[in-house]
Image 1 (cartoon, one colour):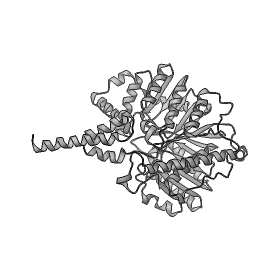
Image 2: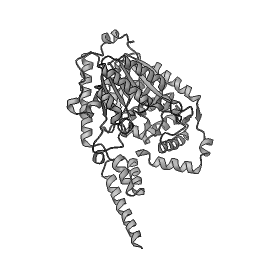
Image 3: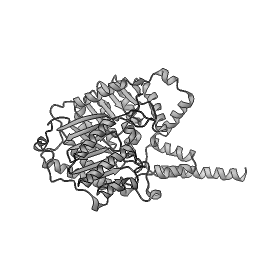
Image 4: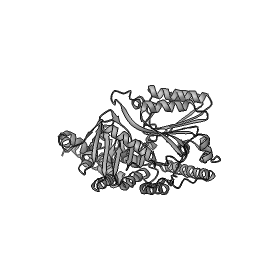
Length: 491
């Protein structure tokens, strides 16, 4: 053998040994372990560069900061409820669904998430309408505006949003903005400088100045929360950018789902935001949880003319700081509890074995399972992996629909038209394990029926995946699907 051949073989051998040592020294599930081994072995040297930024776990310091703030926030919220004489542990008597009762117990045990009633909810499926209402609500703010988004684009909508926040900050309103550094690459220091100059604050969630030694690309803040004056809260799937108001030709109409909430649940959103904020900033910049007020009392709600006794829900957050995959547990429990129908919308369909088995089991048990995914990519590998799982699940009688009226970004799950979930979490491994997510789980038949009606309307613009369509997919496309599926645990 030539010297060059020996060197190459030696490098490959050392690379393989290093890959095995690197991956196996961390506790991971088997699928993730094999996915990273594939990356490190088949991309010699380069794979380690990818792993450096995307494969390492959260630092112990960051996990401690998150968990410490979680305990503080939970303790404050429990105290607030006790002071208001409403402990948020029981559903209203009108809610008799066994699925709802079991789901609420699950979240009390895994996420310390109280059931909060006395809410009024507006649904938004169009970004133009959602942001028009959001901006109107921010315009009317008199005390504070707390904003948390995965993506802020430096484009027309992003600048419009930022400029509105600048205006409110100059009026003396407290403005706090939390965003993801990787998801908001265009929103750099120059973008935020005018907002900071106006007296507001903007922070990247767990950004690090030591990009080589402490940068974790794989763990993203994917939550979308806005809280205005402790009176109005927003949660759902829309980010901030022109594509989310259907201004990008590449995507066309952007179909998403978002909630506007008034009532007790606003305080759960506020506490979640403050936990994220306080875990990010130094202790001397932390915000108080305001536990000395009684915002949950019926008297307080009555003064704001809210409809008491409506739309009970739980705000459930999950993330890589905890081994409990709270939102995934909720999805699986909902699917297992269904007796008639399951309606799931997700832009990324990359379930782990547990979630996939739940869908298959439901379908084989005679439940009408319908899943809607986009018919166009925004991330090529993720789109091909979604196609793979769509093809696979359709074999078991699950109806897979490809939405063709633009891009489907909604993250909704409805069972039996009585229990629903809306939030930031996709039905994929990344949302289950790697991202910081937040969802509203809603125990209100009227809202569930509205979401089902929206799903049925979307069916008019969707194509059912059939065996003939799967058979027509070419060999190259099938290869890309299978290859992407191998990488699905780390996508």
